[in-house]
Image (cartoon, one colour):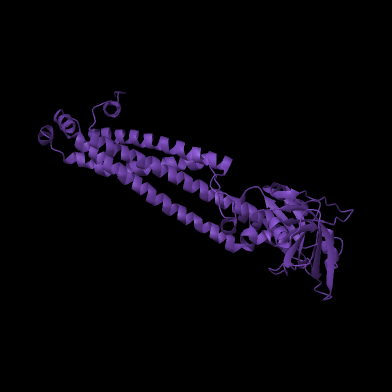
Length: 420
């Protein structure tokens, strides 16, 4: 069996030949190559932007509430919670569970901020010494975070830039807050000092949450020193959210006893379904874009291949006259088309990667945070996405090219040799 590939040799000679193509076919083929390049460019950008958008918004929502919350089974969806003890027999097992990043206690209580001119409703979120500050450190715009310990109570708080602008507050200012005790039906006032100001552009959360020492919430609710609203659990891989939620549910039920408080795990996707359902809808948009673009790029290559076949009709007739089979001749033109596809893909990849890197570095294209929760167009460029998009483009386009290459079988050698 010969190792020499005759069809590939002929295809290479035709593809790399200089000055033999006609201007009309040259322009059609160039347009087909441009279609592949532009189509792949748009597909890469679509996937990078949509996945980047989903990742950024998802991480911001998780930053306010972690991946999973363990709360009292009797607690409702409001921020006025039923307390639980932070001393749980299964707590260390959850911390040691594979895929768990951090476990922290928290408490929430709705209240009101009052200034001389304005009143604004907020949710005071109490945090302890085990709180993971990484999200708020990344979004801190002024001031600093405050220390929290079990031994001393800290009067500092973190507010959002949106609340600060609304109430005309700045770092170092006093913050007067008012709360209603549900059991005694009495109003309580607390004076805090603004330690820092954060901004996540997630306005629904920014205008609501104020971070404070959890000791203040215990005092406001007349809770015992070990009582909290629940636990927040961060995980390493978002795709494992459902599986880890089930494992935590089974573990807490295993330790539950009759007449004792039962805790239930609430995944972030269940706590804020409207946001995550909206993000999931974006996947459908991407699939529609990918399907339409790859079809358009494929039809461009089909038209380019038909032009190449018509231009080389005489050559096809000669090859048939000397005994070359139809499939061998079809392979020649499929090889030529593959060279053209690879050329287009090369330019498409270079343009898309350059765009993503420039946007990630300089954030040239901005967004309205009130509508999109982000200040700039996000990009999430992954090698796996690039490989899958390139492989899909090659496979689908080559499959579409099998149809026009079938036209070669209908060309008669005697008529093709006389073709001009």
